[in-house]
Length: 129
Image (tube, rainbow, N blue to C red; front, side, top):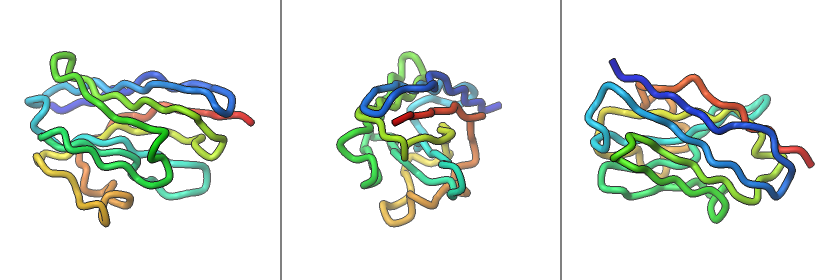
């Protein structure tokens, strides 16, 4: 049974940093497309960063230059390093995986939550001004 468990959320001031972690169980780690999504208050769930089997990373423009995803396959863990956080980054952040080595295209990714069948419970990030 595939399970994803996020951690690392919290409250920070604007300009601060956080690192989220997501441990994956129940599948051959490193063979799926994995991603971070977020849902900001009053908005749709949106893709943030995705990594495919080959390590190719796709980052949406709104966080490019501030957020970086990486993974440690030995620890079965996906990370999201978030720097220079802004109040608009306040959201529930979710880890997700899809049983495909390839991620959605850059045109699809931001709204591709339905394509990711495995999802974590989420971790809250709150950024105050």
